[in-house]
Amino acid sequence: MAVYITSLNSGSNGNCYYIGNGKEAVLIDAGISCRETEKRMRRLGLEMSVVKAIFVSHEHSDHITGISVLSKKYSLPVYITPSTMRSSRISVAPGLVLPFYAGSTISIGSLQVTGFKKFHDASDPHSFMVSDGGVNIGIITDIGHACKEVVNCFSQCHAVFLESNYCDTMLANSDYPFHLKRRISSDHGHLSNAAALELFLKYRGQHLSHLILSHLSKNNNKPELVNEMFSAHAGSTKIIVASRYEETQVFCIEGMPVEKQTAFMRIIPKPEQLSLF
Image (tube, rainbow, N blue to C red; front, side, top):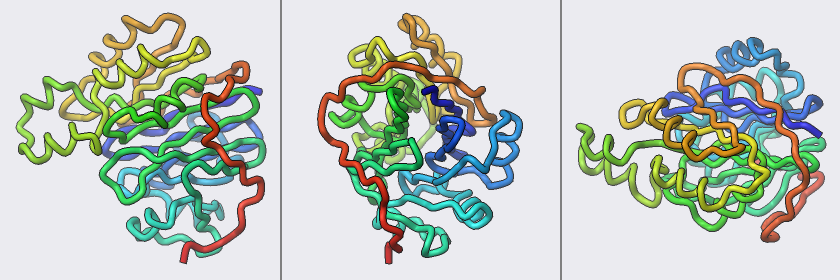
């Protein structure tokens, strides 16, 4: 079955990614306002009625700004780790706050959402794989480096939202203070263009049809630079650079099942409706 994906916004000003199959969909993060989320989905011909849940990667404001209003308006459950919930201080009705844990797979209709830990300067940050039948979609942003969990996910995916945050040279020559440069480039910061390209070259599978380069820095990167770097090695993979100002088009992802390389997924068909507190 086909999976439809789009970046509604990607960058330090807000992040929100849509993954759905026509019957149900999930949002990974909701870092733009409810109104802007609705407007962008409407322009793409996507209906909020098919969105069944929001999954939260971590508590930074560019990933959670729209959650409270979206959840309240549409009665959307918010899947979030207990530590991230405590750190985020977002307002969500207790019955709509649901925990998830690394390595467990949550069923949202026929979508399977698996969170796995990542390295970032947040309380309990996670990346995600969303699957529907034979199609796997990775959402891998805000990572300091490509750990084994990232490599495992990336190698299994038919499409990936992959961080390509900064150009090493631009960051080094920027007027950012030293402590901020060190934070961004650390193993708990963000992924550089060079590191993202290395991951792509070493671990992409033949089934990787779409690569959406995401979370580009406004000051230390350029979309045209990222597009040029990756397009030179794209092969059969379509390269898209997500915008920090507007939504991408909707991409239809189709593919055959990919054999899992590790058993890090534990399926929970019907998660209990529990408050985190």
